[in-house]
Each structure stands twice: as C-alpha cells, then as structure tokens.
Image (cartoon, rainbow, N blue to C red; front, side, top):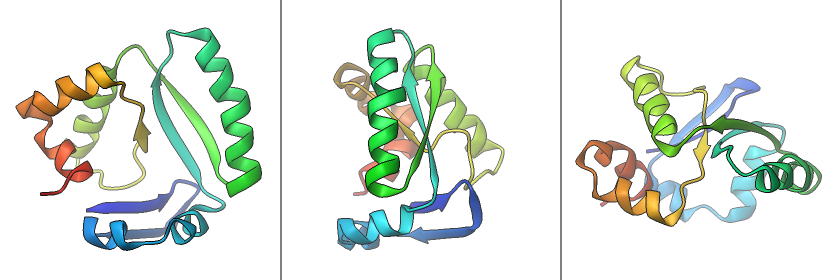
Length: 127
C-alpha cells in the first residue's frame, strides 16, 4: 500500500493500493501533497549535498509545489531502515519520523538483496 499523508495535517491521510497510486497522474499527486511537509531521510556526511538540499531543493519544492521539506540527517542508510522498522513494529502506520529515504545505488542493491528488508521493498515494488 502507498500512503499519501500530510504530517502537518494528520486528518488528511489517504491510503492507496500500489495499483491505485501508480494509476494517478503526477498532477493529482502533487495537488494532494500541496501544503504538506515531507521528511527526507538522507546521509548527512557530505556538506555540499546537505547545503544543496537545505537551500535549492527545499526552496524549489516550496515555490513550485507548495511542499515543505524537512531533512532528517542520518549517519547511514541502516539508521533509516532501523527507524522505519521500529516505527512499523510500534504500530505506527502514518506520521512517522521519515516519509522518504534517499538510497544510493549500492545501498539499494544491498537492501534489495536483504531478506530482512522484504516488507519495505514490497511497499516500493509490489509484485
């Protein structure tokens, strides 16, 4: 399932199946996201990248789509996976500390191969 949620407006949570989400037009996705905040979990070890996301990406998301970006600095991708698994284990289905995670190619390959990440990958890649 895919969940469209606004952290700033918890009353506006809509759960969609992956098929429903995939069938949506991008314009509808961005319209539903307008006025919300998205928490992006990303590795905080590169100051140039951090500055780019804190300034350019944050400003463009706000100006063009009306979405506020909150960066959740991470030491590594495993930290993000652990946060997501802990929140899921605690029964939290919406309003977690991270909405999306930046995963580079190497970490993506590792996560895809890891059996323990099967639940998370099914969310992103339904079969």
